[in-house]
Image 1: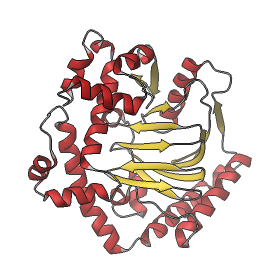
Image 2 (image 1 turned 30 degrees about the vertical axis):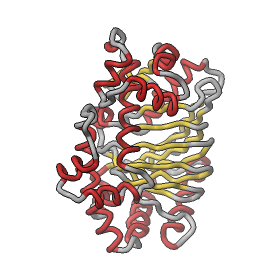
Image 3 (image 1 turned 90 degrees about the horizontal axis):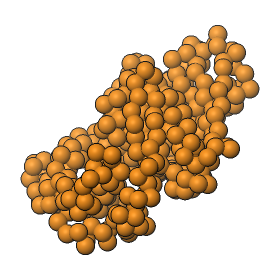
Length: 338
């Protein structure tokens, strides 16, 4: 029978709870950092198993923000595609400038070789299917082009796949014969390929082209976050597109260029505020490193996002570090609650 492992944060102290939760998430999927909205009351539960080369897991958690950053990508040892299917609740899955909002039964795919994030605004329950790159590519052409595309869990072939995965996971929990793994995994992969074959070609082509543009834009922004003169016109010029098209790409994700830049600057500042190597630096100097040119403005927007001033934030979270183990490699990550 397939071996099912379960893990829970129940009964753990808050600091140990987040250490344990991040350890289990990294070990089960790929290097990530999970930031609970409320550390003290956070509850997480995870069940996992393998069927052949495919990983399967069910995750229940309270509100949290999960990030697989550029730094995590650099430490990723196995290239995986992750199918995220919402069992209960809702989630927002973002990758390559796209955003997939999932409700019950809906699913999307994320790629571990590129940054992504998942936002759970309320308690939720998610099923995760991990498929190695080389296996996915045998069944689906250019899977990297369909990341973060939302797929309905109620209609057509995508609905059929959603129902099949639910039933298969129930069987794994009750006891699954590993001898049938090759046939079952082949059936799952064929269903995934069939479900994504229903995506209109025009939508896929537009999506692929838009993805290429968004990737180039995001890379440029990330490389120039510290430049206070980073403007839409400058970004558009560097990426050889019009400013109008730049704004259009961001509007498709219910985002604006300015909001994205501000969010990323605040995220990097919040991370830097907690790094041991930065403890001797002032809040203002860190803010100026990431493109802010007014301490007053930085303090105002930081408080609006995190609910406290940068100095309060630093004092409150400075000691909260988690140790994320990924096979034989490990890395110390600082948690930040947004």
